[in-house]
Image (tube, helix red, strand yellow):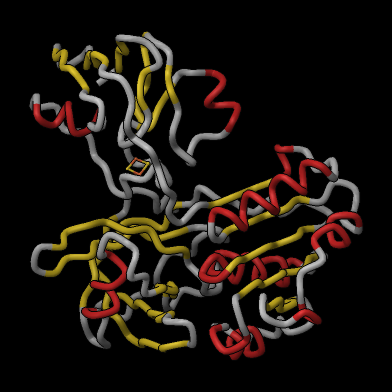
Length: 323
Ligand code: FES
């Protein structure tokens, strides 16, 4: 079943508060009907709505992809976010209802790989939990390296045990020399054809990806998912043309294409506004793109046929979109 475009109303059946400000939310259908299975690495788009906050946020599924009784997500309370996670922590009470889209998967598992290396930093472990469950079910060889600041803020320990994953999850804590991740050693030991998955803070991801490339793991075997990213949307003014709508508008130096078009009456769906979810991708008919997102692959960026209009800009004075 293709769940990418499904919209669901689900109830919070259980909330489990874990160390490190992480709330695990188990979501069930209102009538107890089974939920569609998802593929490991998938996320839900969650409508976070309370007072002035009205946002869609993406949360990776950490439950068993094959289980149909509930979906589980992990939500980190992040005081530096734009209010989505703080609000969700506040309103997420058992019995409350959430509006959901998905599951969608931009971070799929390559199940045929002979060996998989999973690296989760902090809350970035959530998609890895679903991947680890799936790889275990398939009887595949893998290790999940779970990196956190310290043991006291490490979530999911009980769940790792309950899921029978203790033998394949290796914990690394920044404040414990003896558990520090020896990334070089792990990469050196990767088997021929291994695939690598990484999710977590940007610095952690950049570190793992650059080392993996140095160790000769091809970009096509390195898979990443950004939860959020710092995007610089500023630059020179340029003109954007929405060809099908017959609209042309100037994009100012601190403005995004999506916002400029919205002012001119052309609505583009946006969710994360940070170039990580892919909701706003538009086809480009003319013009050179200044990609600022973390969603498109390097190959897609090189092809220059689409762009994330919530953050990317034009390199020249004009860009024409199929909108
Ligand atoms: S809205 Fe998420 S990538 Fe643009």
